[in-house]
Structures are given as C-alpha cells and as structure tokens.
Amino acid sequence: MSEERLFTFRNRWFTVSVLGTIAIAVVSALIGFVWLPSVQRDAQFAGIWNAICSAAGVPREWYAGGTAVEPKEKLTSVEMTPQLLDKVSANSIGRGATLALRCTMCHGERGMSEANSPNLAGQYASVIYKQLIDFQKGARSSAVMSPMVTNLSDQDMRDLAAYYSNLPRPPAQRKVSDALAPPIVAHGAPMRNIAPCAVCHGGIDTKAGSPWLDGLPAAYTKSQLIAFANGMRTNDIDGVMRNVARNMTPEEIDAAAMYYARELNAGR
Image (cartoon, rainbow, N blue to C red; front, side, top):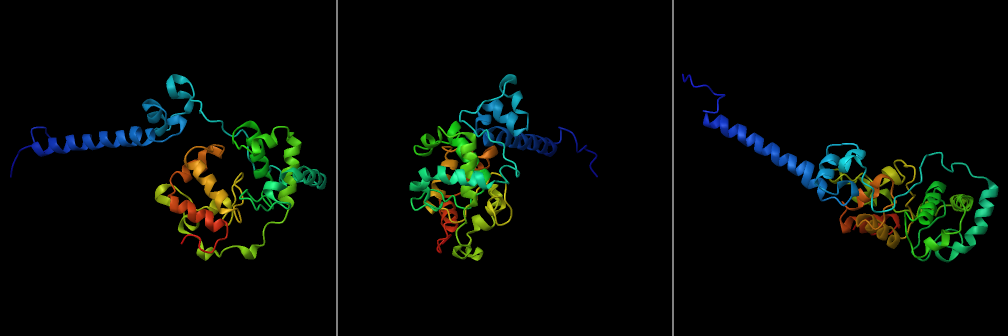
C-alpha cells in the first residue's frame, strides 16, 4: 500500500482538484455578482461596484461610496395599502360622476371604452387614484392623460376613483373559461421568476395597487406590458411589473392580453 500522502500539492490530482474548485468559484462569482446584475437596466445596477453590492444585498445607501443611487426615471410616490379608498361616500360618487363627463370620449359613458383605452367600470378605487396621481406628478406619462389631470385636486381624483369603482363591472358570463387560460396566466413561469397573473390581479388574490384586468382591451394591455418591458413605463411599485414583463416572450404578452380581453383564441 502506497504511503504517499493524498492531501499534498505534490499529489498532481489533489492540485488539479483544488485549482479546479477555485476556478469554478471565481467564475461563478463573476457571473452571479458581476455579469448577471450588470446586464439589468435598473439604476441600482449601474456600474460594476453597484452591481456587486446589489447582488450581495448591500443596502442601497452604501452604493457609490456611501450615497444612494437615484433612479433616472420618476417613480410613483403613492403608498398603497388595502385600506386606501376602501370606503367611499355617495357624495364623492356624485361629484365624480360630474367630473367624469370630460372622460367619456376615451373611457366611455359608463366606464367601458370603445377606443382601446382602459375600462374603468368596477376598477379598484385605489388603482384609479394611484394612476391619476402618477400622471399628475409625472411618474407616468401620456399625451392625453397628463394634460387632463394637471388641474385636478386630490379630492377630485378621489371622487373620480369613487365614481368609476362604483360602476358595475362587465358581465361575468362574457369571461373566457379559466380552462382556456394560457400557461403564462394560469401558472406563470417559475424558472423566469414570473408568478401567475392571478396572484396579483385577481382570481387567486389581489395585491394592493394591482388593477383588475378582466375585460381590458387587448391592445391596451399589450401596449402596457411592452412599455414595462422596455422601461418606458416605470410607475409600478418596486419594479414588479418591469421584472415580469421583460422576462415574458412576445407570444406570452399577446396571449395574456388576448385572454384578459376575453378573446376565445387566447393563448392559441
């Protein structure tokens, strides 16, 4: 039996094993802490040092030599809670109905659009309120909506939200069967960090600030997913929708938009 020591660098196989393990660790660290974070478009990943710090979970105020990295885009300032506008008064609904007369061209007389604008009938009041504030403060931009909300007071926006949320949603029987839901809607894509749409947008649960999507025009939903994916829209809370949309394929975006618009060929 050989008396040669196994764990010594004079043993060629031990040396190769140690160096191979070190090489794998270095390559893994470079991929996980440098390359993968740096290819993201988010502001906190700008630069190698910021990418490493972000991947390692270092607090943002430690980035860039002790100063927080300010995002280039304007983000939402609305703090969403389940209690926000959960109770509305009849007076608020009445005032909102009057204010909504200027909105009928795009959003319909009873909150149902025929112009590929979002349907607002039965939408959560907190969602409508948040979007109005985001348009007014520049966190979300639109050539049509931004000028429309410029002179609205906070109470005006609350009243509009109360009115539209009080309108009946589209008839449930027009909804496409859940059995026809495309995989991206029903199951998400866990390997790409995409949860099922219904987790936030109703069906399974509802996350504060997430809109009810059922019945939205397909063209509108598709355009918003594309805007989130390419960073043109940035008012989502904590970047949730941007992270989801940029990991979706064009086919998945089409399928989701068609499904929520109740088109029978959704996902096919």
